[in-house]
Length: 587
Image (cartoon, rainbow, N blue to C red; front, side):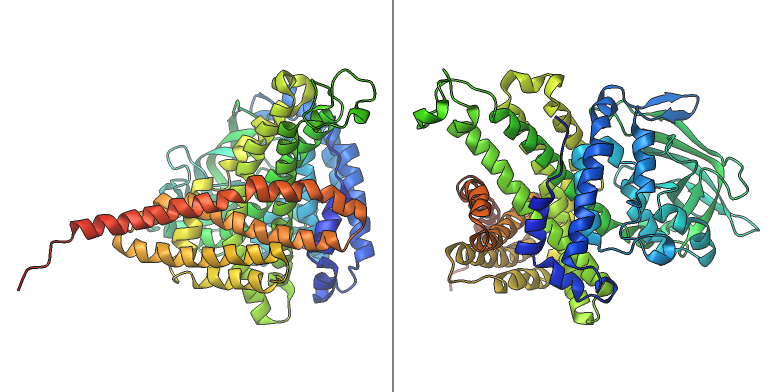
């Protein structure tokens, strides 16, 4: 079965749980974007994804991309789907109207890309970097570069790449060796090689705009010497630039997306921003790019859950403990959806989808607030949220996409291990999300070492207090979430104190800390979902009763485990230091 978005689920989170319509209406650019318009956009997006994008997912995996003579042919149906994507105005959903976009909220674009990833992850890799390239050029590009490229990128007429990784460097961008030599006419000649470049070559658009991280002559070593350069596949005069695809990778998954090894042979390019400030120009992309990867994780988990839930509602096996005999309808076996083990899997993954969606949609709303709110303090709070929460979502949502999809495969038994049902493709496709856009371990270190500890946890404490104050302690779920948020605040202080004695400790416990943050925030999210469900129809309450119970029984207890791991590491350090202290001399 192909993935079908369920706009009613996203609308419930967006409207009933987060109150998005009023928040967006308060932002000047979206004063006319009322709930009816948002619903219209989401309904049309759901139809487009289901009808134009999802059907080519299987061919994307089984046929994949083909490489010959430096050119890449995408799978059957991809070119037609991409042209429909452009014709429908979807690439520019949140781009400014003056750049050819629709000027709609970033949160609507976030939901669109969640659904696109769920329907056809390989296809979605092609336009997935448009928003980042657009933002980078919008903020740092010269007027000439904006005139030449901004509208083409905003509308999806031309696709873009982000060329960072080199074979010897990986995530250590300070080791980048690609060179850019200034020319008399103001251009640069770029030479070097890049690997793992998604969409480095393809047949979807006539031009590809490469954003290349490189080093100019006499630049200092390390990341501070890096510059960002626009290097198009086709130059403004129509000639082919000296940009070459040498091969595409044979991958575990994502066969519909060409992952290219690129070579630049004194290719012509132009500087974006200032020399040596390439990372600053690139980091404009990062919060939105990492959020989009988190949404990929949510979408892939939803796709896996949809398949498993549908299968469990049809497949009969054995007698289910506690099943009502009348529900069997004379059948010799019960639906596997009635078996407690299967029910636990399905409800647990649904709990992750709804809780993670709440946090991801809130983050997308914060991107809108950070960009458009008239109150500087509101913009500052929103930016603080995005900075701290985005790495949490990227790591936790992609982790759950892979492990949760594997759990959903388990629902199928042996049928899940063969290609016929499509669930094994999701498991393979999801695995890479834990690696790219910064591995999950890098996200954890970024969170704890670079963002939480430098100010003693003050910024994170502010975020947690904000969440606490949005809850009602008279409700049991809210009070429980408040308790966990308080424990998390104290945990940050504990790590900060221990780090003075052992600076290596935060690197060791960073993954556990990030996981604890996600689970505490999920407790907040589910407290809000519970409150919204209680005020909704009986059908809405019934639909979320199982996942709500699963969250508290099977998901939330991990918080105590992670808390204990980190505390024990800190206490063990204190004990080892105490044992190493020489005894006080007797007087």
